[in-house]
Image 1 (cartoon, helix red, strand yellow):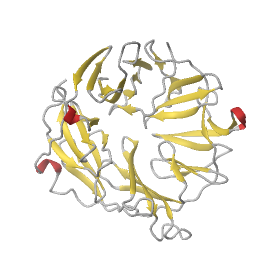
Image 2: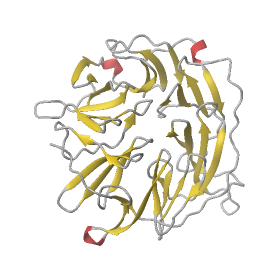
Image 3: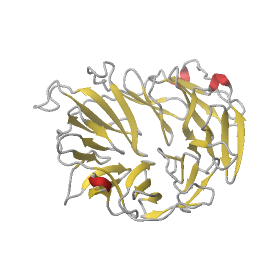
Image 4: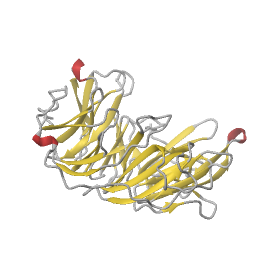
Length: 386
């Protein structure tokens, strides 16, 4: 069953905005002589048939999943944000303070990939005085863009207000009687409504625009413009070029995967469900492959293959994929079976009970996996055996 092809897309309405000029707040000291590779390795439990012994370890802030980019692992720590190379050596450190507040006494922080070369540190809490002359000691969101290579600050922006919600990438919805959308480019340029269109999402270098649309039962939403799926919403992206669109006409849900760089859809194979709708997409380091739920997309050949979930099969959730298209994940119904997919074949390995809280985050280099223990916050770099 192939996913149906259609035209255009959508999200929920907004307009207007508030924010301030850039304000520097990141310090970047020289690389520390004390790096994860120079400290004793703290090994976390893994499926030993799949991963070899840890080569190095690091401590991340609990609840903050490491971000893996080409040759760099970005960690949120208690002191800020740190970039570590494939050998565990600290490349840079950005000493960004957390923004505390009544809702988050310890601060709320997300670190996302904007492009392969830029990361964004998004903090919510009480904004520092001076960030906005009209918003001293007021709650809000701070966006700091950092260069992945050296941790230097590219730009910093503030969005005052409690009702600021990030949609996709560096796009934000500001709730209110007249909701607003604002987005930022990878260099920190502020994007607002233009010619009646609103910035609904950013995907790598791309801005995804939308316009108001009156949907079923009179509800007003936003449909994305310039993409092949009528009255659709953006459901997921790989933070580079690939997006998943979904449209519902009151009877049927239709989905489509689209490459924003070419404007062309990807074609699912017969094993994929008709509604192929993952919540998240994860690219390989080179962007040639993307995984989401049980789907593996080949972006160059514009094809999607699906594994697991058919009658009599256990569902599969892929979590990472190599530059060669080898996908790694586990069964979705229970945290007990590791799955490796190569071309049309799969291999399964039992996950030890002790490794139930260990998650594969990605591959920092060829055959070197980054694993994270959700209970302790310990990060390991392990070679793959398979």
